[in-house]
Length: 69
Image (cartoon, rainbow, N blue to C red; front, side, top):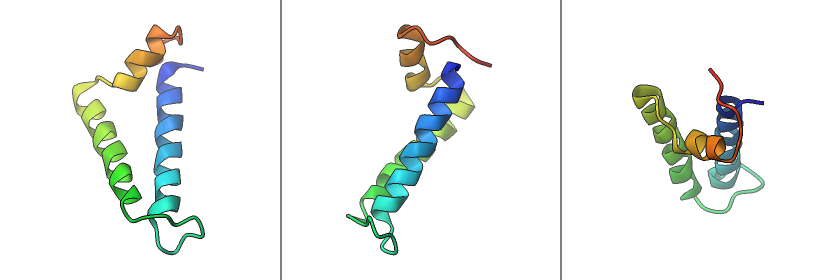
């Protein structure tokens, strides 16, 4: 598995988890502040799409995961 696939899997997991914890209709609801985490992940995805740099991908490559394209 390549670094770009792992980044997207992690981002998707974070988004779904924070929506489950931040949505009042969810049985796992904790606080509406979890939706701020969803926005944070979204902004990071937007930033990495524009600048073509992602901190998580850089960290994964340093851990020995091969880069993907």
